[in-house]
Amino acid sequence: MLKKLGLGLIFIIFSLAFAQSSEYQCMTAFEATIHEGPSAGTTLIGKLGFAVDDAGMLSGMLYNDEGSIVANGALEVADNQLPVMGQVNGLAVNLAIPLGGENYVFGVGTSTMSLADCQGIYQGVMGGPAVGPASGDQGDWVSKVCASVEINGKVYRVCVTLE
Image 1 (cartoon, rainbow, N blue to C red):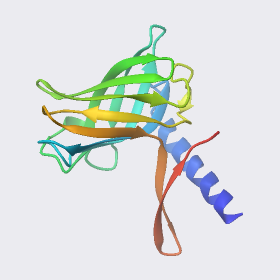
Image 2: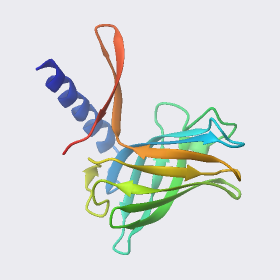
Image 3: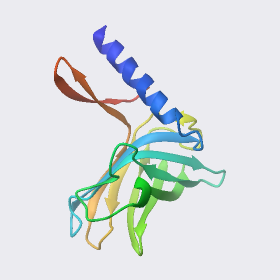
Image 4: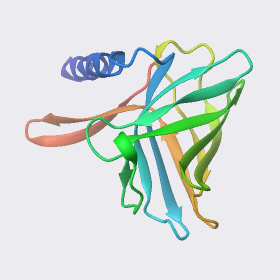
């Protein structure tokens, strides 16, 4: 019972947090981490708000209301937000996140549900490999609804997916 109540509460919290940005068709938590290469340790983390048009073009914004969008990186991001662009074809997802100048993080991956049909909170999981911003950088990206919850003095990271 407590477990179900906790997960329900987390979903409600995310619903309220993401509902504040109604300019986007869909919202999800997002994280891209570079594990190898000159930019190893760079992480882009935040909320991804996006829309997909009839041609499959994805456009949106990665932002973080609670802190820096970039962890462990030397990059400075104005207003803690970065534009995101890409293409969606069925469950295939291609993303480009410009970091300024000629620097980008690129991600390719797969979604467990159609992004074109998403309205409100994205209720699936998507992810895949990521490269950039420097030549030789390799990492991964994932998008799902997660939260840190404190129960009886212990902090748990909980990720919610609905099936």
